[in-house]
Length: 74
Ligand SMILES: [Zn+2]
Image (cartoon, rainbow, N blue to C red; front, side):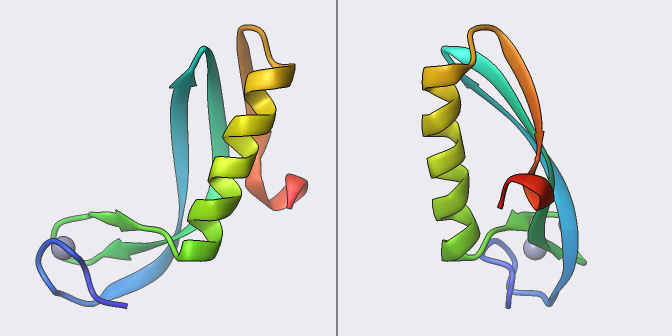
């Protein structure tokens, strides 16, 4: 996978994402591709879709704040 910003090679990594969506959801250990040049994080379509599902579910269940581990909820 190439970086969408600078076109350099990316390597497989893990990312933590904080999403504010009525509540605050922190998702840890998300598989991603990290650019070796500009540190841009890229998600595959699959992971991006899963994140959307997770955020959606959290909106209904979480009132304030939650931390989830991607590797444990998938
Ligand atoms: Zn880049």
